[in-house]
Image (cartoon, rainbow, N blue to C red; front, side):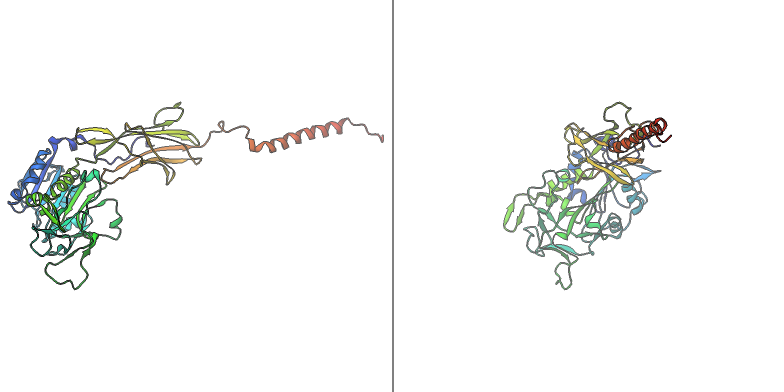
Length: 437
């Protein structure tokens, strides 16, 4: 019988949050990107990242060897690359990198290569047709746009303090290609986050061409930046604009529909999102799981319970604080516990004490069998927690049943009245005198 945790998917290792181990590989197909995007790279270095710049075809810097990965994060600013070298291992090597629980940031432009499209498609995202652009004839950036309205300014940013902090205070400049989720149920997937989208007047099409067919995407369904958190807590960010991270867009003023901003929101947006992307924010870990009888008469984490036992469950959930670089209590009112045997027999909310300890009490169902404590927590921007703990529930032993129950008293009375009646009948039958004799 399993008596301890079976599954615990979370990013809680100190190597992930230790700045010394923030090894980040940057793939660039144009050496000028180091200069044009230097502000972004310098900010990453200031956050503790050790950046290594290589070409996608470079073979001297392997991504992994003999199953050991040499980097925690991967940045791909190489939209036109047609292949990845043996050091990277092709698209399969990048997918293996993601499958190992590591993080990837991909920035492209209007000419997306097939390897990048393949990686995005495996992550659940389809880029629009090559050479198309995101266009907005209403919310374009005056002074930056060249007249075809392909440099747009958008304020449709995901409202999430975990992923984007307080969010940008001014519109975000964007020039690139749009994308959409792949699959019939992609829009409802809990793994995909619409971080940056177009406005109601945005659409995706070929610039300077008349729109004769329905655009590839329109309105807020025109996705600009998408974040993905896989079930093993790897984090991927796909941006259809590599210029979004450039020095020019970081420092550019924004004139949007006559309202002027001294500086775009690109820098705040990019840096805050990269903190989340590279596991600097939204980390949870769980520990000290325990359960026992409510009266505390038995051991902690017993293998079995009896039907109708009153038990209490507790677990410690902590959140990583980027500012203090330490773990502190996680506070939330939406953490649920399930007591499951095929289907949940009990689903109850856990109460916290503002110190990270989550507890609840409940009665074991009156059905014996093999159960599992299941704590499955998914919240926007946070790493997933998936804990299970198995116990068995047995029925009452033969000496544990109640001897007399209230609802059976009519039957007890009938039985005893029958015995009394039989005694009286026997007494009368044996001792009465036959008057006819």
